[in-house]
Amino acid sequence: MKIWKVVLVTLREYHKKRYIYYLFLFCVVPIVIIDIGLMGKPGWVEYVLSGAEAGIGLCTFSLIFLGMLTYSPRLESGEIVLDITKPVTRADYFLGRVSANMLVGVICAGGVVLSSFLLIYRYEVVSELILRVCAAMMLPLFILSFVSLVNLYLPTKATGITAFIVYIVYGSVVDYLTKNGIDPYITIMGRSVSVVSVTVLAMSIALITCGTILFNRKEL
Image (cartoon, rainbow, N blue to C red; front, side):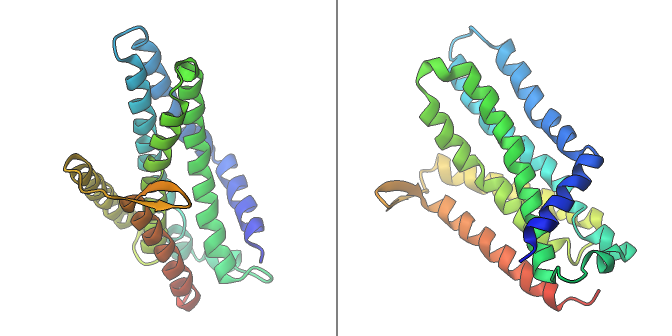
């Protein structure tokens, strides 16, 4: 499989267009400035932890724009036909582009986590930070999976509008379930895991699988 080659080519493209740097600045810098500005106030550590979650939310919001540019512009211009040449298969291309977008999301999230860690590592809440970030990462994973699928069939703007609607609905549903205690936990390998997180992960994998199958059958 040549997925890794597609990932590298995509990351070079993002580097050339400065997408990664713009996303990093948009997601990390505001959170750091706010956290430092609130330093010393009561409950500051909680502000930082909540800020890390908000940073992941910004990452997701930003990655929607990245996902909008994944397939439809290339399909409309015909460039995608040139992209898919032997030995790169359609499955390699689809999974490579999705993986590159997710890697960018992980880089942005890593910046959020690192900045938060450097601020609160002395307060012995690192494990809480990791747990919150891991839970929050389900959102960008799901959104990127969803955008990657719909971007095969919808124009760029329609993809963005649809993704924003799903983004808002997802956040509302998760908030409702959390506030009303409708998020049971199950034990997997001796650890408690949120059923909502497991469900979102399964849906994300299903969306990527469907996208790969549909892309293999799509006329270019």
